[in-house]
Length: 424
Ligand SMILES: [Zn+2]
Image (cartoon, rainbow, N blue to C red; front, side):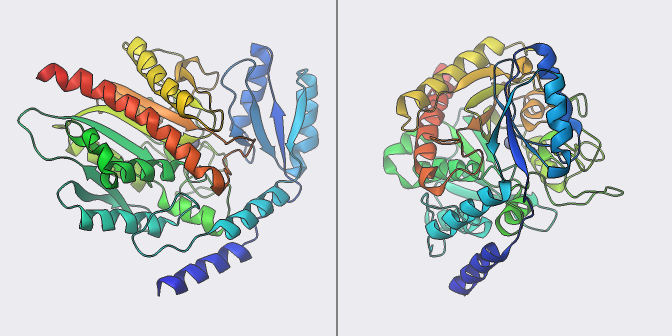
């Protein structure tokens, strides 16, 4: 049965036709603030897709543009004296290559196993979590915090050495909110595997509890596997909308729609008809609001790509009160990754506030402002040792998950020292 499902899924992958023939990806690096603003306008245009957001003057943007828009787009760049290079000449051929490699690297997994040699299906992610809960009942519990629009379980794994007299600090991690950023769920799964299945790491959950949700947008993730590799949003058609899907990371209710988000359902930054309109964001919100007694001290949400450790606020160019601590702790993690990297990852630690492009309605802003978690980071993972964008090849999953785990350990040691040892 498992084998049959796998064969069917592989067949679907092989047969699916995306339609990106003639689409190009433009690499644009602004030199002035005016040029930055000129590029930013394209976020709000339907069918312009930022594969990479430049953070400030001198940083790279990669923007996918449909054939019908290319001459106007190039004229606009010229008018603003913006030079460009073509990063991808034909997105369709690029995706076909990626699909080939994916089919070649696909490994057969028996039920409940995990791999970092190839990208897993959502059903395999969940089977792994269920197997761990079954095999390690002393330290693992599973909580279904809700369902996606299409009815897939949103599973949260809790890893703990058990109750204690003093309230333990908690680390909360989620992944996969932007479903095409495929490296994000494996990073979460690797942390889970290292905590639960590698006895050397058992010290990591002695005094600190972990809650990890590896797949926050499973409908979208399935859709990237079977229909469109470039899909980013969820899969609900909101009432009256022309295009499918809401950008879940613009749908959280803190300064919702303040900036950097759109009410046009055909943009990639559609914030939904109202804040928390989507079942996936509602599930996360409800979990946080139902667990206010927990001592949650750190929130990490994994995205790709850009090698950036970003802290709030994202909604505008404003810094939170504890920005110095956020910056310092972010540097600790970034340095740990830098020392461990085998693919030359070099993280920039920055406030989203310094970004040119504000993005209101993100999960990290909400978790900090409303759920009251002091340390919140959006981690933009690497794109590998070549510009693979978010189509990181399977052979580079392992180096990314391993180096990221070193960063997570650095976060853990700060949390343990600051919030556990001080209580002893
Ligand atoms: Zn993202």
